[in-house]
Image (cartoon, rainbow, N blue to C red; front, side, top):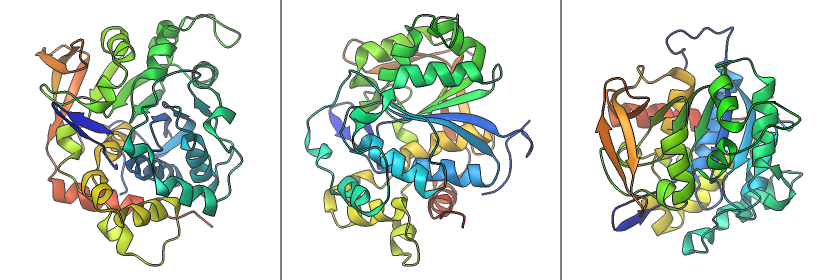
Length: 330
């Protein structure tokens, strides 16, 4: 979900392999999402399953970053629809859960009423930090890409976590050892105030200042220009959770206008296929102010980078919609 200065805007929300990636070495992905208020996250999770079915990646964990009651059930039912019921699912023990109008989401109720799931509430999930530590510790070094399409609540807590039964490393050391890079839908570049950053400013500060690996930001300005979902909604022979959520939201003028955009999906694409295939980028360091607005310090050797245009928005819309129309493999 996204917002820039003075305005809150909620995001709704292919074949081939990225440079250096072979079909035999799919990238391992942890998906950290504010799914629930936002239906673009269903599109992003659907793309992850589409790319997993094609052998481009492996989903090793899925975690919610908010405490919205139906976030975890929506993750669970999507994973089950695509035949992956055993993917670990986590949620934060504490954190922000803004009681605003966008949490009144008929599509989440429609999904849980239609598709099988085992977890009935986000309170039923494991602690997200526990899931992160257990899953990361079991992966090869520098093999995991974390995709975050929500706020940084879980990642801030992960960096501050202590050694445990899963690893003798603290959170920052564990991330440095296991994570290849962080692909984040957050911020507005080169400066702005965006929802995923300002909703949990303390966690954002921790991640911006302490994250030990490369961070690639897909900013508000990217997804805002990539409308998606019209072809998905118009297709009558698809019965996926993604189709259902977009169909329900297409009947709501406000949600259709402001959420039918592709903020979250771009972060999944670069996690699987790298930056260079579809985007250019600017390297440097993202900075953060007390109100959650971000700035930018350009540095060719910086560990942060934000996406700029290479492939046209129209081409990306087609590519993203194609992937969101993926159905379960029978």
